[in-house]
Amino acid sequence: MDEKAFLDDLRRRFPHEPEYIQAVEEVVSSIADIYDRYPAFKRVNLLERLCIPDRIISFRVSWVDDHGNVRNNMGYRVQHNNAIGPYKGGIRFHSSVNLSILKFLAFEQTFKNSLTTLAMGGAKGGSDFSPRGKSDMEIMRFCQAFVNELWRQIGPDTDVPAGDIGVGAREVGYMFGWYKKMTREFTGTFTGKGLDFGGSLVRPEATGYGNVYFLLNMLATRGISLEGKRVAISGSGNVALYTAQKLLELGAKVVSLSDSDGSVVIPEGLTQEMFDEVFELKTLFRGRISEFAEKHADVCEYYRRERPWRHVKADIAMPSATQNELDADDARALLEGGCIAVSEGANMPSTPGAIREFQAARILYAPGKAANAGGVSVSGLEMAQNSQKLTWSAEEVDNRLREIMADIHAQCVRYGKEDGSDYVDYLRGANTAGFLKVARAMMAQGVV
Ligand code: GLU
Image 1: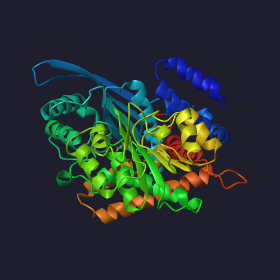
Image 2 (image 1 turned 45 degrees about the horizontal axis):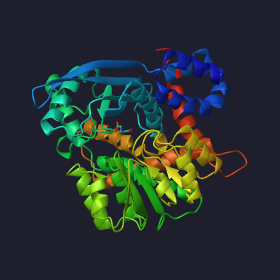
Image 3 (image 1 turned 180 degrees about the vertical axis):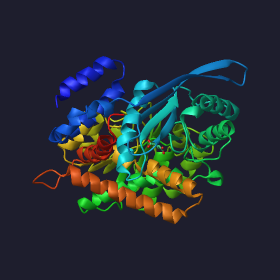
Image 4 (image 1 turned 90 degrees about the horizontal axis):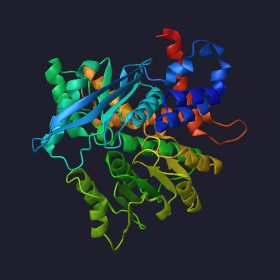
């Protein structure tokens, strides 16, 4: 494969989409060898069909704010690939959302969903609407206007949206409500729903817990215990908080959290009481990390507008905020501080330069598409429960989540183990395993 020509062509066709190109470049460089090994792939131009989304739906979302002003946002759904199951992936509401970001997320989702062992294709959607500072009724009106445009394009066997940044149980509830009204059907078209109307137990916890389960699998390959380890986390949304909760339960120390205003570093680690407080602050009151840091100034340091990486001494890093939040300098600072493992809770949080640093140092490094796949996995389990019209116990869902994370880890090891050494390139492993399943399905289904 002429990797460079392929990427140059993509850059020429999509000149203003750096995140999308970054995600494609990372996968293409991992799978180039295996792609060349099977000439049949090239004959049907599989790579291009796999990298360019099947379909993009874009629309204007007009809604009325509390003061009677008419506001307009952009809305999108990127249906990337449905070779192995219905399109599946979250919805992101954030002021930074644009097509490049949603295309990268939908592309990543395709490989992630393939790794989960469940039947889900890849998609992503969202809007440049920012829920921050909006009233509950404004959020509801926006969600309804968004789904008013999208409802014809989704369905339980077509495309199943869920949450992502800025979209949690509240937003999913409002979107599901409007979808149900338009279709007159009660189906499992959204996941991440409330427990009383078809949601799955353990779905809110799943991404964070799943990342810790993945980390445990990685540490086990080197005979390292998690107990007492210092873990730096970024973010303080659903992924970060449940990661912290599981880490505390397992006896690790959580030494940082952050939000878009800044980072809190807790050198001695969060106590359970402090965790309960920050959990309540973030989930019930939608407060800021700075308020928490101020209250605990005796044991915390606060870094305004900064990420935690250069200010912590950590054995393990679990970036769980957003894309490109950890660069090469951050990676070097973490390595100098003795970091031995990085497991990504966010999608593509490490820049290509940071990944190069981690891999050159040969520490354990797991990309988000493997490590954070627990969230969408339990979404897949929610779809299964909805189809059966049954609810599984928390124990059953959690056990399945552990099994799925162990399976994803095994796939990474199988395809990522370097010849003649014990080193596992989890990035190559995840990309190759994710690619092969989708590629086989695409080959079998012809040019569609
Ligand atoms: N947004 C989450 C992800 O990045 C979850 C998607 C889903 O549950 O469909 O995987």
